[in-house]
Length: 311
Picture 1 (tube, helix red, strand yellow):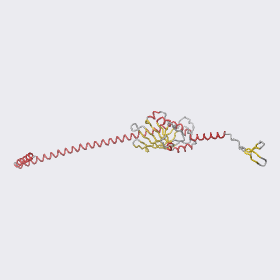
Picture 2: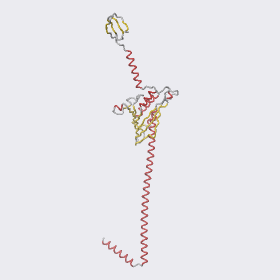
Picture 3: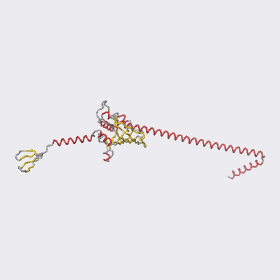
Picture 4: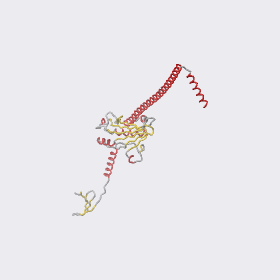
């Protein structure tokens, strides 16, 4: 360090000696040269700084553009996913409403292990208990809901629904079948991650053609969970006002399967009672003319064996 300081001092002294030996014009020229060098270095530093700013700005703009592009792509994917899932839920209702018998159409929208929860109904037959399972261990809820598992059980339920629909009215001249048409409102469709909700309005189609005074109308809601990979349905929970449907059936003069069964049971009990032979019970009583026996069929029998009808 001491040697370096001594060398610097010697260099400064030498420069001062050379500057002292310069003329005024030479010193002015030296100042100009030094200023020019300083200005050139300043310009170079400024240029490097500006270039660095440009490079940083370019990177930030590219990053911003990439983020915006990714956001647009994500929004587009979300719109497409919403559309696909809306169509899948709509297709489920259509297949059920027309009693689709092609299992491939059901399998195309139902994930393996699919479950279908819907209200238990009194106005039509439902899938046998061995094909359906209770919603949970709560018996009160199990009495209101049934849970179907797999496409086969769903198709069976669709068939039973179609069988019930064909009982409305009489026979159509053209042999057409009554179906259910669903109107799904996109404005009432909501999606939260892999769960979607949708309201619908439904009505029978073809009942009037078969002689019914009017079609059957009802509203409901549908909750569906989707597979994130395939957009197939994992589960569907269908709710609607069964009481509204029963009321409309009563106005059409139709009886539900439960009511028909109860009526048949009552008729059978009445026939059984009519067929029974009531035992004859005789009770002796006295009157002014003598002792007579009164039977349970309101007839009177005298002590001499003759009988007469009571007044």
